[in-house]
Amino acid sequence: MARLIKCISPVDGSTYGEHPIATTTEIKDKVSAARAAQPAWKALSVAERAEYCNAAVDAMLAMSAEIAPELAWQMGRPVRYGAGEIAGLEERARYMIDIAAEKLADIDPGEKEGFKRYIRREPLGLVLTIAPWNFPYLTTVNSVIPALMAGNVVILKHASHTLLVGDRFQKAFDAAGLPEGVFQNIVMDHQQTADLISGGSVDMVCFTGSVNAGRTMEELAVGNFIPVGLELGGKDPAYVRADCNLEHAIENLADGVFFNSGQSCCGIERIYAHEDVYDEFVEGIAKVAGSYVLGNPLDEATTLGPMIKPQAADFVRSQIDEAIAAGATAHVNAADFPLSKPGSTYLAPQVLTGVDHSMSVMRTESFGPVVGIMKVANDDEAVKLMNDSDLGLTAAIWTEDVDAAEAIGERIETGTLFMNRCDYLDPALAWTGVKNTGRGCTLSSVGYESLTRPKSFHLRTKTS
Image (cartoon, rainbow, N blue to C red; front, side, top):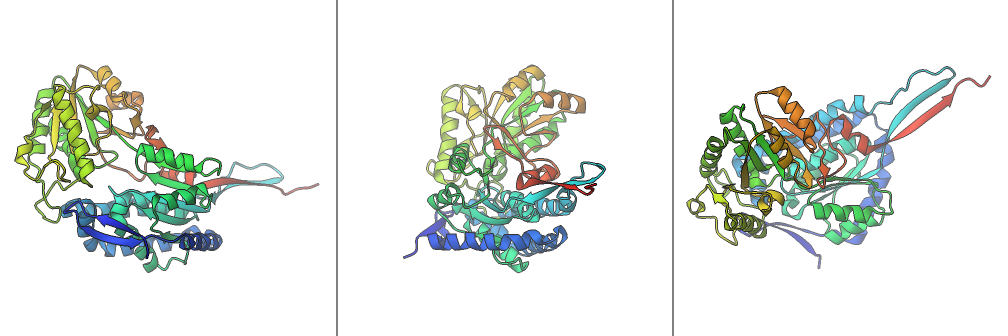
């Protein structure tokens, strides 16, 4: 009897989907098919590869009406926001497709008499993408489309919570007529995935997930000379300066904290507000938090859906309880959200003050709908606190002074510095992190560098 991986819905705990786990023989066959397909795929022009990838994006867009409720069932995002993920997928995919011809072109080091010289960007071969559940389409497209455009073949292993997303990608590429073996979605368990990496069966791993899982990826790759791209956790900070547009800061930061029930690697998890605007800011963001509608994500009125599983929600509850026990103040009445109960996936949003960096809620990734806010006296204090973390994906500053934002940004240890926005990924910019947030880069022209290797051609044209 085949072993199964099940998608357990956070909506009601039911089994929403299940797939048989691939056998060892099936995995080997798919790896062989990928290897066999790669030379011909590499031989295609960038323009020819672009036709296939654009057609796959078109096919995905044609499925968008089905995807929103499917996402709600799989990972809890309200249907009213479902279309945003596919719009983001298109934005990122089209951008990386459009820049590919220029960014993958040979590098000309300049003329040298008697020689023809250039550097070619060669594909790595077989790329394994291991994708998470929280933004399951966006995180997948970050590596899959650029990898294919660079001439690689791809195997996708998606999270069990979002099993059907892998199916959607396979359907989209099949509809595009992609040659057999070039893209394959495989349902594997953790051990099979580990064996694939440690056995040297792939040429690169693109992983998005937790810090601990990222360490495991590095350990598995040891000795195989396999590059590993890691986009791991975040404890992203924001600084609200005295000169900001306060109304905009409140609205935008509330969204950055609570969207997707806070389950975003680049969501805002801690805020430092200047003492001149602190009280008004806290009052404003707490009011917004209290206005969310926590409920079934299939209901159009719902603005805050469940977290992915009860254990995740209970972890955030424990952080909130610990902070309050240590003297923090909760500004949202959890009793106003009757679905929010211990052991449930449904969790009320929360805004905490009276917090400090001795508390887990200000140091350990929450990945839930809670934020701690601290009062600061100046830029120096804000920078010191923002940098007091072992994670560094994004950081955001709210100010009307661009020069100040740039100067402060130079001092902040982060992969992306935002001004007057947050929780967003611009495909024209490198998506990367520092410290324990990971290594490598996706998207932008820089993203193509990690999916290719340089090959130099040094040709003597005159021998006499």
